[in-house]
Amino acid sequence: MSRWEPNARGRLAEAALELYSERGYEQTTVAEIARRAGLTERTFFRHYTDKREVLFGGSGALQELFVGAVAEAPESAAPIDAIAAGLEAVSAMFVGRREQSRRRQTVIAGNAELQERELIKLASLAAALGGALRGRGVTEPAASLTAEAGVAVFKVGFERWIAPAEEREMASLMRESLDELRAVTAGGRA
Amino acid sequence: MSRWEPNARGRLAEAALELYSERGYEQTTVAEIARRAGLTERTFFRHYTDKREVLFGGSGALQELFVGAVAEAPESAAPIDAIAAGLEAVSAMFVGRREQSRRRQTVIAGNAELQERELIKLASLAAALGGALRGRGVTEPAASLTAEAGVAVFKVGFERWIAPAEEREMASLMRESLDELRAVTAGGRA
DNA sequence: CTGTCGATGACAGTCACTGACATCAACAGT
DNA sequence: ACTGTTGATGTCAGTGACTGTCATCGACAG
Image (cartoon, helix red, strand yellow):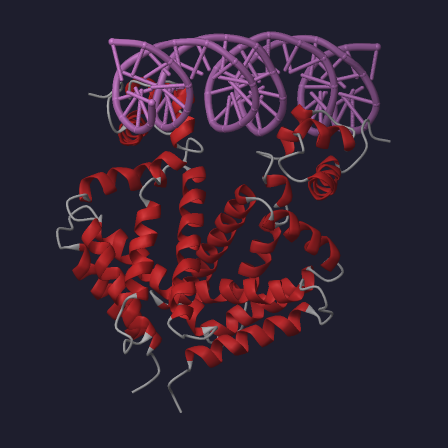
């Protein structure tokens, strides 16, 4: 057996989401999070760089998955279709996590610092997607624009997925949102 | 005469930009900024909510000017043309401030917290522009998309304006960037 | 049995940020 | 001229996020 309970990082993330939900982000101290996870404040900062980052532990995996799927889409796929493949892959990783995602977004919506962190994560995602598209031979500014569009679709699709009454799968909502973007950007044509 | 030197707020902003440039954002304490401005740390926090905000004192005026110009563009103007009018207005307010803007962007580029703050300011700008467009009768999602596009053009134009060798006026670069966006989004057509 | 390693704890310290109260020139009203 | 109010600032004592440093001690290799 191990000297400590396993998955300290996960316990910290869980404790943080609970406390942020219960009493709000600002009213929660890092010491409290650590205590609920059975650890000390110092150990919290060994797993997460700051009090905000504990809510974004999954963003690295999300970005890797998204970028990987874009990079490995069929060579024949157009840029926007590679992005669509990425959205499909990402949707799979959220299956069964809708309630947790709702709680998390509620917390983020209630605090400006957390919104800032979310924005920079999305900016990082857009930059990485742009790089993946350039790796597929897409030139600028098409690569960056398509990447930004992909992130915009993800945002819209995600918001719909966590909407109160919504029960459809994320993948469907992502496809729907992408279709709407296509319709809008095609505006003015036949 | 007044009891204190005038323009405390401006002196703080100036001192902060100097110190952030000289020794970096993280290596500068608020007490140092206040001391250089001839004030105390407590007074700094009466003028700016936090250590980051002191670099964004002009963002309120920028947003007001941009939004106002969009709202007051000729009724006949298309959404994107209203945005173009806003970009013209904004360009005027930066005249003579290129060097200061360059130093400021260098500081921001060197620190993640400052980038986060900049991103949320731009998100706020996009939201406000979307509102102004809706006020002109533009429906969703065209209003939000056009607003996002406007912010994207502003970002690109601004980056070019502060590029090392660049000497052209901001207004020209904004027009140029907007034209490029038009070209890209028109892609696939005749 | 012993030495290394890695995750954690303990503890002191810096600094961003806040609340409460004091100060005092300017100014208005008398 | 006298006085009360106001507003920007100073002073001081906090709280809490975050960091550097060293100690601890099961697991594991040899």
